[in-house]
Image 1: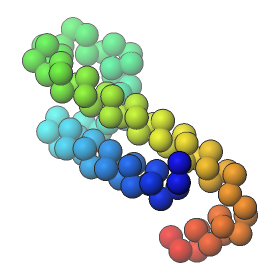
Image 2 (image 1 turned 30 degrees about the vertical axis):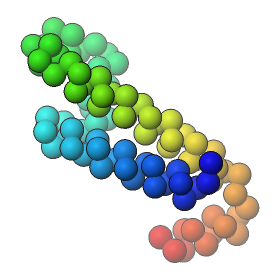
Image 3 (image 1 turned 90 degrees about the vertical axis):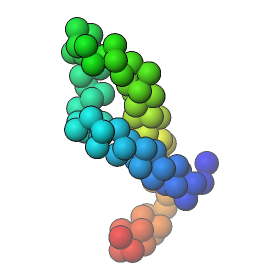
Image 4 (image 1 turned 90 degrees about the horizontal axis):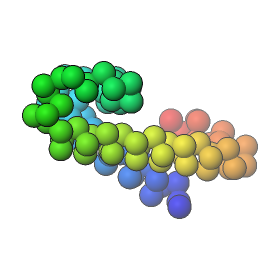
Length: 89
């Protein structure tokens, strides 16, 4: 996977996650932690928004996976490329 494609995909996912964050007033990371700790199991919101929550959770897990791939790709890049990227940012 090319780095540019990876970054583009991550940007798309982040946009979709922002939509959920705005709708529910919760950051995706906080939502993910609440779901993985089963803090929403007793919530009425879980029943009402189950399908949206499943989609939100899947999108966030995908972003985490792509972020891991991003860090793996960056770690393999020669130091000159890393320096150029840091300067350009």
